Amino acid sequence: LANTACIFLLVRYVAVHRPAALSWAPLAFLGRASVGVFTAHIVAAYAINANPRVFNGSPAGQWLGTALMLATVVSAAYLNNRVKAYVPAARRQSAYSGLGSHT
Image (cartoon, rainbow, N blue to C red; front, side, top):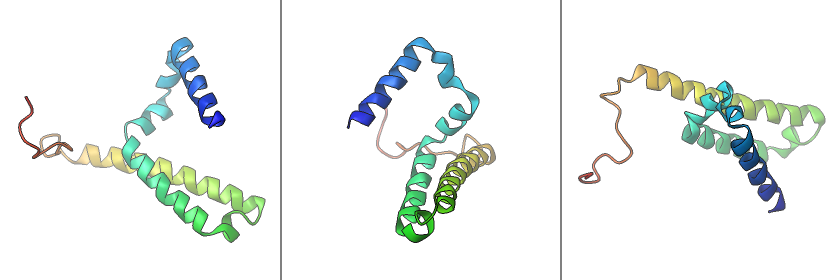
């Protein structure tokens, strides 16, 4: 809990005093696909935790787990970006489609 509070304080400090740091291109790239990236990272975390002998047995295994997580996150963002470029905006559906009128 204290670690999370420290991270929130750090992010707040950066957002207030150095807002340009949050518009860094790789961070913005991941942020545009945040739901897909989050979902993919959960699947990768389950795979890593399900195989502790492979990913926690040695320093090389830990680096492999880190590389797998990073590759999963970046590829999810890339695929999301490609799908958005491929599907025309007129054919994309909102998450709120079919839920009644939006007035």
